[in-house]
Length: 373
Image (cartoon, rainbow, N blue to C red; front, side, top):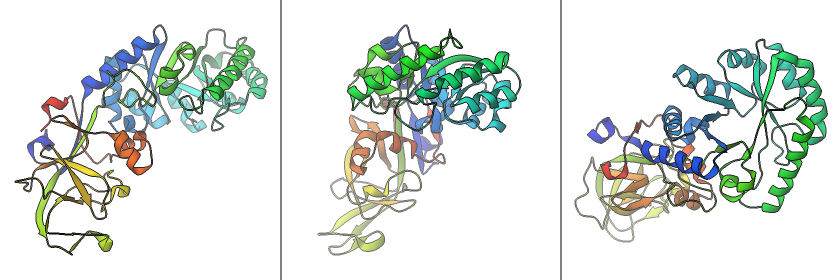
C-alpha cells in the first residue's frame, strides 16, 4: 500500500474486520429483525464500496443510501444485496432504479404516481413524517397515500413503511410519541401494504429503544464504531487517518507560525509541518487546540490550520524527521484520537468528522491497528 510505503502524503487505513464485527454485533442485538447498514456519503467517509462489503460480510442484509447515484454505483460495483434509497429520487432517476432492482422511498401521493409512470414494477417504502419534519407523508395524509397506491396497481409493490426519529438518544418521550404516530399510520396503510416491513430505528434507537426494532433497523454511526448512546464495548472505530511530516524547523521565541500570526512561540520550539489541512478534512476549528500523534505522542497543533498543511509542536519528542507518520484520527500503539473527541473539540458530531475526510485521500482496506505503521 503506497501510504505505508511512503508514496502518499496522506492516507486512511480502514479496519474492515472491525466493520464486519460491528455489523455482527448489531445483528445479534436486533435479531430477528434484519439489519440495513447506511453507506451513504461515501460510507460515512470510509469508502462506500469498502463499507458495503464489510457490512454484508458481518451479516447485514440491506444497504441504505441517500441518492440514486449512490445506489446505482453499488450496483455497478457488483453489489447484489437489497438497497434502499432513503432520500428523494427525482422522477428522471426512477426508471434506472427500478431496472436495477433498487428499492425507492416514496414521500407522498405524487411520489407514488411518479413511480407508477416510470414503468416496470417498483418496490417502494412509504416514509411517514412523524415529527422530524424533513421528508415523508404527514399522518393526516396517509389515506390519500393509500389511495394512490391502490390506483397504481401492479406498478407499485409496497415492501416497507418507515419513519425517522428526531431525538431517539436525547428525548425518549418524543420518540415514544413519534412511534405511536407511526403505528397509527401503519394501521391505516395495512390494506395496501399487508406484508410491508416496518422500520423506525437508526443507531440511537437500536441501542436505546429495543422495543422499536420491528422488522428492520437502519444502522449508521454505530456500525462505524461510534455509538451515539451507550452501547456494546465491542463496537470499534474503523477509520485511521494519517499524513506525513514534510519538514521540521526551529522557531525562536516570539516568532509566529501560520497565517494570521495567531500563535507565537513563548520559547524556542521545534515545529513539524504535517501534510494535512482543511482541504483533506482536518477542521480549521482545531487551530491551536487539536493534536496529531507522532511517534506515539500527542503533539499540539500550533497556528491556523491551512488548506493542505498544519504546524505541530514536536519539541518534546526526539528525532522527528521528514517522512515520519502523523495520525489525525484512529488508534496506534495504544494511543487513540477518536472522531468523537475531535468532534467535541469542534462542537460537532463524529459523523461530520468522518464524512469530512476528503475522497482524495486513498482508503486502504483490511488493516488492523496492530499492523499500522
